[in-house]
Amino acid sequence: MKVVVGEDLTLLRDGLIRMLQAHGFEVVAAVDNGPDLLRELVERRPDVAVVDIRLPPTHTDEGLRAALAARAEVPGLPVLVLSQYVERLYARELLADGRGGIGYLLKDRVSDIGEFVDAVRRVAAGGTALDPKVVAKLLDNRERTLPLHRLTPREREVLAHMAQGRSNAAIGTALFITEKAVAKHTNNIFAKLGLQSSDDHNRRVLAVLAYLDG
Image 1 (cartoon, helix red, strand yellow):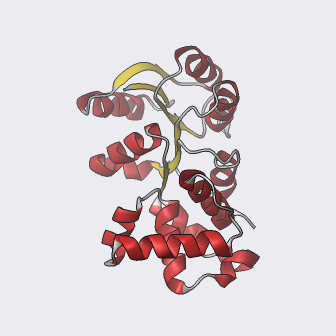
Image 2: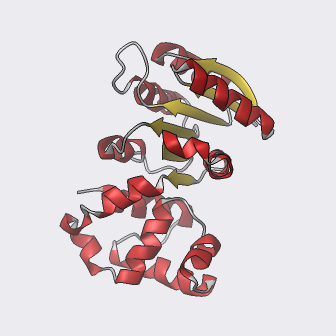
């Protein structure tokens, strides 16, 4: 599985490269700025990109901008962004095109190697991976979003886990309920949020968008 890494901190970039290589990934490029990142993503079309949101030359959202521009040229390009802080606007913008293959993790999550590698693989497979801390902070502000007030407490729990990118089986394990029960809650969530029947994965992304919106 081919990976492009965009990170300007040398120690973290080298650590990411070593970690990914140790788990069977092929790091085909590792860059430290936005313009180079965009070029490498478009030219190499990796299976997944691991990108710091803040890169030179602006050190604001250069990495995210490069990733979004690359996704515009290579539709569906899987991107996992890393950030030092919870930045809700960036999480919302990353999910805005409604397609999978996207993730948002805080940098301290990298220290949990198993969880980080699982997130990279999940995003590469077209899924989503949102940091639990990001989800927790977003949850604090969700009461303002009209459709979400219709959800039961259990449905909100299921949606929170869905936002992290977990499968129905994984959600069932986390909440100590059956996978069938999770599927029922998931269908109720889709119905209450007005998401019409279509590809389930796309509806999951749209449900997460509703979770982030407002």
